[in-house]
Length: 379
Image (tube, rainbow, N blue to C red; front, side, top):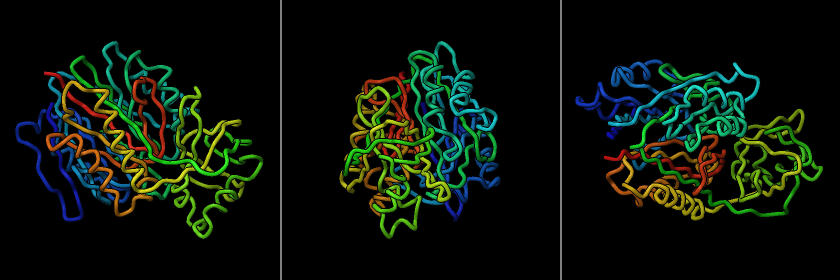
């Protein structure tokens, strides 16, 4: 396996494609700021760099390139696999009645007996991430692992973009299937958030739309906690996500806000909040978030001990970036310090993270976590 990186900033491109691999690269992962990644000129340039590759483009709330987090840049990671085959699929969410059907359909396009891993990138506003993953989990080839993330738009929560071999568009879901026994994939996902306040019960909701907690309007409750910051909703609520017990009752998932509806007093979350669920507000310190990123890296290393990874994909939540502010690079450094200088690092800040837990194959939608997927090919 061979990987190389390029980056675009306002001054233009830094780096150039390898002459040896330019025509061999099969997959290019492109993560870019919402205001620049949809520019047709950027797609055309990348297509010129790697004319035979499948090009996947995703809008972000921050781009991870090597050991740095950038804004309004375009991070390009080009991959050549010696023994691993890939297959790509794209669907539009409005072609299906439910997000779970989107998940079922896109996995159906990729299912083969030698499927090892599926990397999925989805619109981060219009798609219900919980339902998308539910449909994928129920229909994926036994033993295959799913990871990925929901596209972002720098915390605006208005429109996100995803594309496959075209300029990225709103509403798209793209998945890449990896096939073969020589590919080794590691995964890890950790948060670092801490619950506070009373345990509350969801008394009125519809999928990922929350109306009431303990019979009280949820939006008004959030506004009380936020105080003066309530005028900056929904972005200010990123500092106070909800903890919810997962479906099997083992452990907690974190749910972050995507939007609000003042007219009906509701809050829209990235994942479902079923009636009867027990939830708590959460908060975090700088150090706990950075420690969480390091723990995710450790888990991904434990799940793939055979060889030091060649490509490390980090997907962290926009909410973590809001809290960490100028210290955001520290969570990236906590990962790169563990894996060292010989690996390629890429990724982005998202509206939701997709990963199994350690020692698990079943995938979940996470919010407010650092999730890591590592790729290595055996000799």
